Amino acid sequence: MSQAHQRNRTLELTRGTAQQLPFESSRFDLVFCVNALHHFDQPQNFIAESYRVLRRGGALITINIDPHTIETWYVYDYFKGTRETDLKRFPKIEALKAWMSETGFKKIETQIADYMSSHKTGREVLGDHFLQKYGTSQLALLSDEAYTEGISKIKSAIAAAESRNEEIVFAAEFSFPAVIGYR
Image (cartoon, rainbow, N blue to C red; front, top):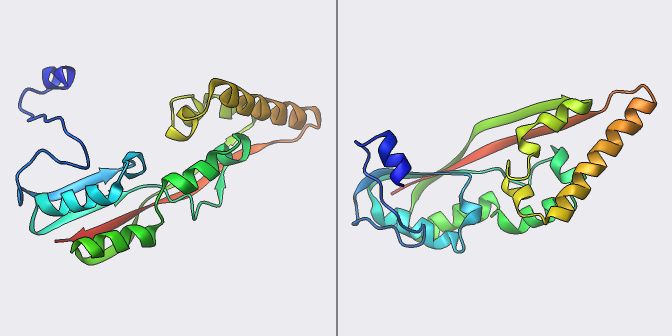
């Protein structure tokens, strides 16, 4: 936090946890949570805390990938267990909407906030920042051995394609749904 404060001294920085936000009730118009919900031990508590700190008419916006609907992501194809782990870590959109409703949020809606479409050809994939060990939480959670095994599978697939004079494409096609609830 000291590094962030040095970069911009006008910011008010506060340390806290998602399950117990260190702010008084009805303080904010917006709580914005991007690619973090799956890291919280109890996301329902975060939703309740967000409701508490929002003013009437305020909104909670969560944006995450949804592994329950992802059809194409080469990480899932080459790194054993990543999809299965994500299916456990990420709540389904309907569950998230239900938690918001149970907490008291009104007018709950979903929108597509962003869409990822990436096609890396052959060795180009080895430079993909998402393929780095800590480029995504999916890979960061893997043991070094499992990560190395996945990289080896990718390199073997590239070598096999090259030996046949074929092009191999590593695709990532998925959306980032936003779930929005209003207090």
